Image (tube, rainbow, N blue to C red; front, side, top):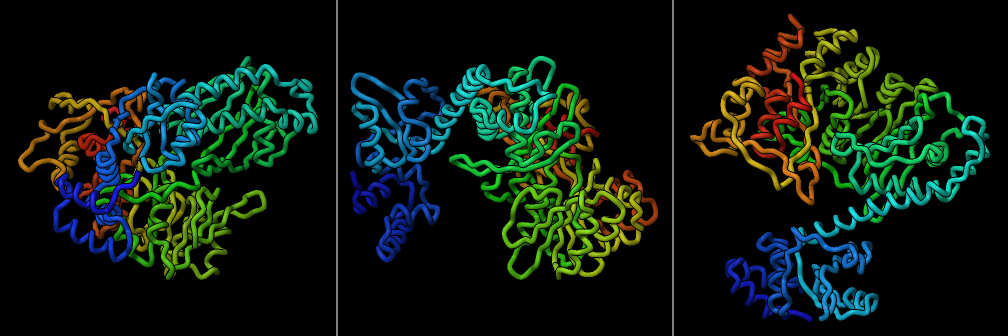
Amino acid sequence: MQVSEKELKEFILDSGLVSRKDIDGADDEAKKRKQSIGDILIARGHLTEDALRRIKAYILGIPFVNLKDSKIPMDILSLIPEPIARTHSIIAYKKSDKGLEVAMLDTEDLASIDSVRKKTGLKILLRLTDDDSLKHVLLQYQKSLKEEFGDIIATEAGRIKVVKGEKEASREDLKKMAEDLPIVRIIDSLLRHAIMQGASDVHIEPMEDQVLVRYRIDGILHDAMTLPKIAAAGITARIKVLANLKLDEKRLPQDGRFKMETDTEKVSFRVSLMPVFYGEKVVMRLLRETGDGFSLEVLGFHGETMELIHKATHQTTGIILISGPTGSGKTTTLYTVLDILNTPDVNISTVEDPIEYQMKRVNQTQVNPQIGFTFANGLRSLMRQDPNIIMVGEIRDGETASLAINAALTGHLVLSTIHTNSAAGAIPRLIDMGVEPFLLVSTLKVIVGQRLVRKLCEDKEAYTLTSKERQKVATKENFDAAFNTLLKEKLVKPGSTLDQVPFYRPKSSTKCEDGYKGRIGVHEILSVSPAVRDKILHEGTTDAIEEQARKEGMLTMLEDGLYKAAYGITSLEEVLRAVSE
């Protein structure tokens, strides 16, 4: 089932999707490169892959099906196993007396079609679909796997061997327990389930008569499942074996790490064990290693805020600080800025605790306080490694702060994080650590304050707020600042008023159970201008610094959140949950 280049060119021309001039130009290039005209048009951005597929299917007489809103019965879907469906982009969606209807992206993949025919023993009725439909159906496999994992855990929990009482179990007993097949299958299921659900953390919490498993998804903890109490010792032992921790140590906290690979990605698990009343609580942070790097736009930076970050990255000396509480995405922002700076002509060195993402061409060092290797010691050693750019995972004390300041003063660009509630709050915090204000004004370039909010799914409900309703959410000044930013970035029509701007509520759907999917940052970028420097030297209070920065056009995190809510990225409820004024 091949489409000739002549037929393809004629049908693309007849479709009206591409001009004759562009088609002729692509045709000439295709002949020179000995490629298909369709591939050249896609590469030049004149045609999408889905549009080309539809044209080819039309020429070949293959029907097109849209499965974006379809719920396919599991007995039909499972006729093609998930690994095959995902690898070859082929799915079964309807069975009748005539045969099995399958939808795919590449209708010329005869080997996959023949493989499905042999496996099912049915006549295959070929249909074309698009990327969105395929992604929607592949998610249905995941939901079925979630139920399957529950069945595995319920089945295997009854087969767990009790070696001895948990307190009496020796190291050898615990090792046997960790290698017990039911325990291995339960842990494997829990971890794969967490990866599949997009969790950032897994909590395993021993209770009086059961073990509670919770996943943090998009910043919110969800109960995933409960396991019988009998499984607690084996689960903890298995995780200790994976993370290379002491099996018989139950009185002290332990930290470790291990990796796991699935069909689609590689994930590193950062493990923390803490003794609690009913045993040991396990928290695992999931760090995805094979995902594509982020960009500032994807993280939620826009307009002038993004320009300020880029301006700071063009400096060769000074300090760029990212501030916010635990779990606010500081490290991700830091790595994104580091990725922008990572060019062949600079030497980048880091001191981290722990190293969360491995970066090419970056010399990454992990601190080890147990042997006296702290941030301060690491930073002191880095200065002798001829770095251009230094990244310190976190400024925790006066010694680290002082060394970071000295590094910036002696010709280095320093990136770091600090735990404060706002960008302006970082300055009094550093002064409290013992840093002299005159040194701060000489080195600080920008401070980024941030939080994370959940993003609304495409299917959302629009509504408008009255001025009274807006007053309950935030001040008129806050809303005006957000609206003016929308006007500056031409995201609302000139002449519009705030009363005409819609806001959005989450709407539950088959794709998004609670109406949210993924997270994005809300930011405030404090640029250390001459007027801000003056405030630092003479007043130094958070309020005075923030007031001056706002006069110079800084959007606060609340105002950036209102901007993103008015733009339809998130909801007002999410903004208020994440940003407390």
